[in-house]
Amino acid sequence: MKTNDSINDNGCSACEQGNENYTTFRPAHHQNQTFYQYDYRHTDGELFSTTAPTLGECRSRRDKWLAKKDKMYKLFIGFRKLGEFDSILEAKQFADSSNFSGVFTLLGNNYSDKWYVSKKYWDNESDDNRYYRSEH
Image (tube, rainbow, N blue to C red; front, side, top):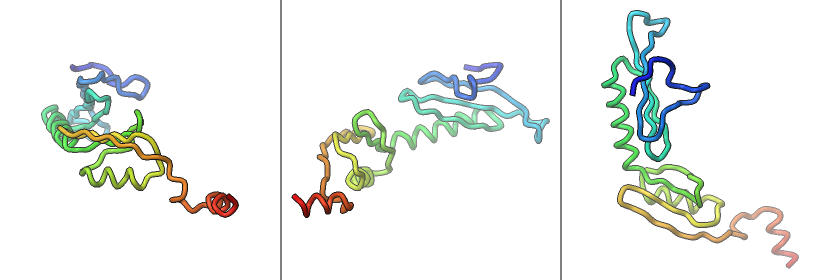
């Protein structure tokens, strides 16, 4: 979808999920050259934005981003996204080293895993924990 004016609304992308928006502009330092400002919002809501001399180059960059995104593993606790990781091991190590407790969900292309982590009381040797241990 091409827009003639800005593809932003008060500085935020106006691109809907699963769609692309683009417009052309001429920067002050290259007034003889036209560039494309391109936004694509994935169906999961994540925004890809780029500028390039051609629309084809913008779409090529988007396709590379989508290919990389499909290979990533997304880690959640509840509905909160904790991050994206290149491997299952990397995501699980991050979850183990975090201080979060609850249901972790790891999603990838043709992969899904869930596990529960209870609160770790004694792993963190803070002053409060040492006091609690010695007095009770």
